[in-house]
Length: 302
Image (cartoon, rainbow, N blue to C red; front, side, top):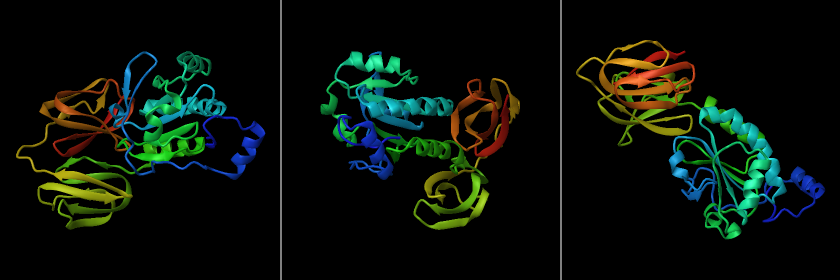
């Protein structure tokens, strides 16, 4: 990506290249990695309102830019490929222009072939309320937000964005299911600790598959790979529903109505609900884990 310098890009390209070699960033931010990203509302090019919080559950890159910013143009060229690579996994880019003339903004989107749909503008420019909200004092300015709404990167280079997205979508360890009867699963063998909701350590070890049958019913906290999450140990008086088929084209049918959760092979929750059928038609082909009443089964989407 590109270094933050000033509120308008007046430095010659040669001087910029020299500075880029020596520095990573010289901008001081009001936000920090690990904090929750502030919610905001902006209006897109079609007059519809975009709320950041409506993309909870997705990884989002919030980009501040302007049509007059030469370094923004270079960044956007990189984001075209990044969006193409990761959007099928659910990645979104919200680009917020600080242009004061909407026609300049719209022309830049069209001319530079910016192929993601979430473009917005605040014609107040640097007087936008979003500028102090995100601590923006240079362009381009970007904020990478994970599925839980937490900032995981600020002004990363494009290779760093790729590495972060690779980790978030493919390499991070996840736990499933959140409602379990006898076992919970991790997507990689890592050390873990399980506590009651009152902080009493009950289990610890290193595994991908954790036997929780000795735990009493209730809510538990699990710590692993730097994460802290929770699950519920449950008991059911009847057997979990059966289902068919295991190799599915469009839908899974349960033997009776029940709560269900569908996780992908990376342990990410893709679908949840209650009913007799599960619509898999919009999911890409691959292996999935179906959890019904705390029991996990493997299914394959053709």
